[in-house]
Length: 408
Image 1 (cartoon, one colour):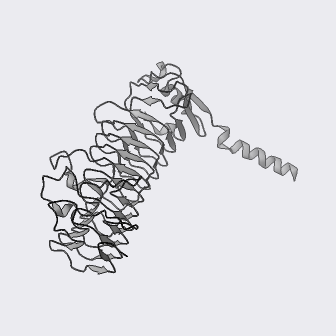
Image 2 (image 1 turned 90 degrees about the vertical axis):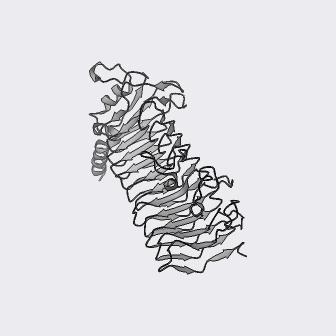
Image 3 (image 1 turned 135 degrees about the horizontal axis):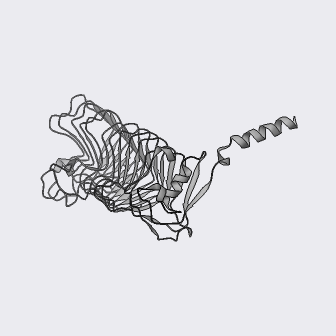
């Protein structure tokens, strides 16, 4: 019996991936050129090459002082599929962050970037990017002033973006296309020119993020920029789940689902109020469903939306409601607080609480509390609690809602 246990223990040790794992240290902040055989010792690229033919999950750390800026002739620095199953810790030898002065693109699988800070220069470069592969993770990274998307995911599946801070990206904070099973959670995104988070493929989750001060490009339509009335701090054009986010003080819509999306859930979000409880509405609609069907809008608090400089010169009062649904053939709006909350706050949206617009039909509106809307913009005082406008209404069911000053 003892011999069998010993044999089993030896087999477990021999087969264990941890037996092959090793920690490598980057000691040279420069290098990273195009000619690998001539690469100096201790550079990121040289260390990466040392991991290429090893089995098991290796770790790369940086034995340089905090505040060091890593440089590279390669921009972006590409981690190809030959370097899969890798953990990269972007903190320094004293625990303070270092800074990558170049973009990083992951093309392999099972690669984790943790605590990596980037401040990238270069035309149209994404700061951090995942291109294909599966099970890649960006955790607790910081992206500053990116010249394109702060974080871009194109292709692959089951990626994770968690706990990252993205600020002042020149396009979107986080952009996802042609990927499924992506989870974007617990991130802080601010200061972007366009969307804070934009997802154009199905089967993804956007949850527990704080998205604010986004959509700073005020252009209302040209050949290069989506009109701001069709932008959102969180934007989805496919069947995705958007839940438990704080979305506030953005220059466009808070959350938008659009472009022939079929399905999707917008649930338990706080739209128009900060995580700290400050009343900071988005400048257009709180939640906007445009040219999309079968969307479930459930359990959100939608307050204070529709006041701001990005639309003050345009007579688009029907576009500054709490919840607006346009050109939609089916869906549900249920269990939401619109213009108020569980504590009966007076936090109305500027025009309608809920607007059905342009041939919207077959919507069920039930069990919502809709209060105080239509009073917060001086020239838009003819809004309603719940309004059916511009040819909408066929097959619409309105059941068990409360519309008034507050619910006792």
